Amino acid sequence: MAKTAKKLLIAAAGATAAYLAVGEAFYERVLNRHFTKWKNDRRTVNDEIYQYYGSPEEQADGDAWFVSMHPEDTTLVNSKGKTMHCNIFMQKEYTDKWAIVVHGYTSMPRGMADQAYHFYQDGFNVLMPSLVSFGDDEEQYCSMGYKDKDYVKEWADYIANLDPAARIVILGVSMGSATTMMVTGEADLSENVRCAIADCGYTSCWDEFVDQAKAMYHAPAFPFVYAANTVSKLRGNFDFKKCSPIQAVARSKTPTLFIHGEKDTFVPYRMLDKVFDACSAEKEKLSVPDALHAESCDIHPEIYYPAIRKFVAKYL
Image 1 (cartoon, rainbow, N blue to C red):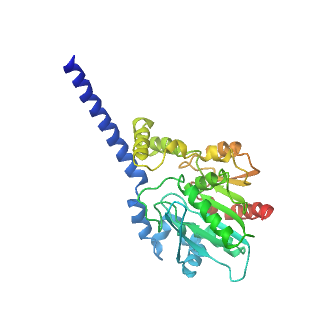
Image 2: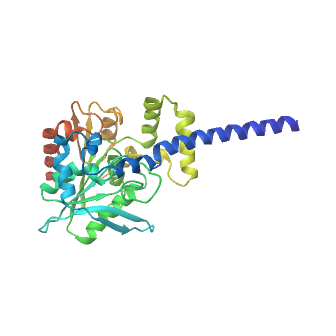
Image 3: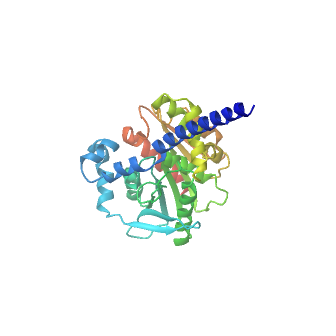
């Protein structure tokens, strides 16, 4: 009996070690910033940037504007003692209109230059946060919007403290969209936040990882996503299942425009109706033909920006 028990313990220990090793590999692959740092460090003012964000013709105005504004890093130590980073672009004359423009996975504030440029041209002050582990943020591992929702909320509070009359719209793309949706589910969200725009966000981090593990790596949810989630929780990062925009929008009181490209397979287009139907606030949705992931603003700007302006005008 003792020998059998020992063998079982050894086998269990081996299985646990293998499970955690699989989880560690998946976790490092999708959440460690080493890849995004490599990519972001090369986002200089040359043609290389356009391999990530489209052709120069599609991106030149927004990117040229971003560079011409000479962005400086603005920091804020939040309630948990973390130093948060953002770029802020103020209008020359006073306005109470603000846009918080939230970037996506593997990106940084500059990756949202086109959307920010359009808001700025429309007379908004613009705040562009660096999400956890991206841009100027110092953390090593991202949280797919889970921690970011708290930080974006604190940036909204920061704006409200600067100007109690501020009227704020939050726009996010991809992981930034998931972040935006989760912000709207926060019970104590500042009343200064008048509306939100969620462009191609996922229902939950768990759903997204399960879908992409299968699509990109031909890997089943078990053990890969399960094990990675175990590692994430053991490291004190976040629980993939609790990173749930679909649950957040069910609590939302913030009017939200949901946007999704009809050819998106990275965050599957089918997720649009799921988050839209779950949302308890005033809501609209925009399906953009022919657009892949995070491409709606580039493929059909003549649809994308007028829809945003019309929606925002209702609440600001």
